[in-house]
Length: 290
Image (cartoon, rainbow, N blue to C red; front, side, top):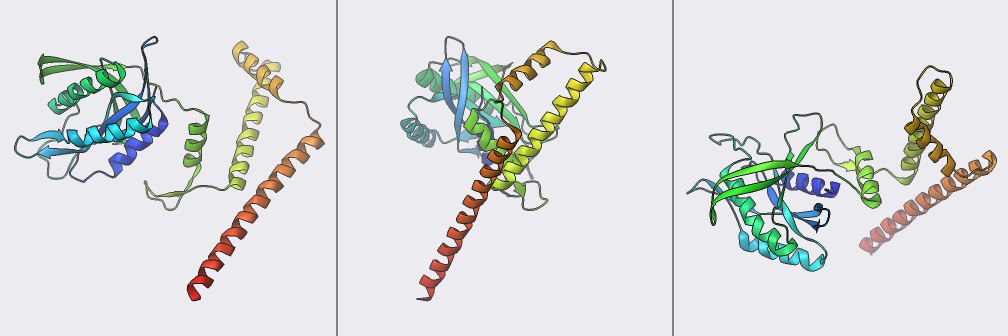
């Protein structure tokens, strides 16, 4: 399992890379459940890398990585190193040939992380998560692998990586945060333009519109089933019945009053927030004049 915040962190790392870097790599931290053989990736941090011009290979600052790992684990006692991530290589201007993800540098990095995962999480096979940042496909491509290296100690000759199941899951807090980021309005038409988070009133309006659309879809489905136009599905019918059963029975007038009162509360809080900002701005300007 992988948290969506990890994906966002990797994408941010890739965006901030040097232009001569074809890919970025970093450390994955999380938990490992040996009973269910389940790895949960909850966070990540970048691994500084560079190309050694003399040997033409990817190298990394191991001392800095050790310090970053120690600082991170000191603040997160329940999390351990469970693997590493890499974006798929992208073409770099001036490079002789496009780098492959399955290069010797990948095998050497994977071998280096084997020692870290065994030491910190008792995980013999570190997890490699790859993210395709080329966006050539309709959706972001994320994959996980486990590797086997063959060769002498500290000198892998050949390696084999096998895909493993990967799901991106979020808890309630993460889901709300990611949903808020997705709903943000871009400031321009550029692909990576910064976005402004919508306020509480707009968020409430969008939620109500989405809820009405869902209710309309469910009502249309039920009408088609009852009229014989569509064959009913037991699983869908049971899910609809469970959802309806959880809705409290309220008088329409009472429910409308509750929604109206809540909307007025949001508007009041928004007004007080704007008023406080205005007073602070005025106080700051008066302070500068005096």
